[in-house]
Image 1 (tube, rainbow, N blue to C red):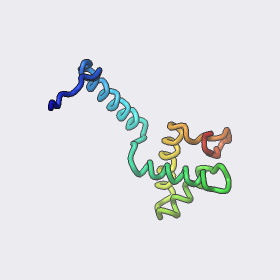
Image 2: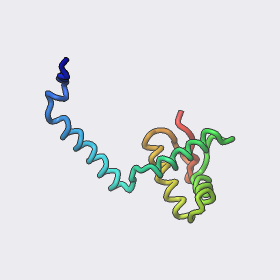
Image 3: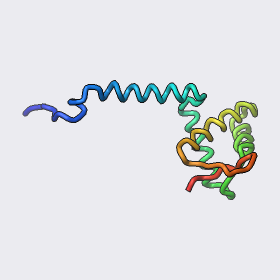
Length: 112
């Protein structure tokens, strides 16, 4: 019995790994330069916001609601809560999962 592997397109294209790595690093550097660091805390925060929007009685909320909720839930300062919420909302907007309305202080709701 042989353990020979079937050649794939990836084996024939030696630049695949370098190209893929370059794309990943470029995306990471762009995220860091933009102030967004993708991490598990931000994703957990984003999940909390999605849950609030999905399970809440109203279908939208202002940033101040998220900030106050995070401030109480995690016993952190308003500044820290606001920073975490802004990062999570930016992540969700980039993913196309939430959208703001056109108000000066927008109401965020789930994308349909």
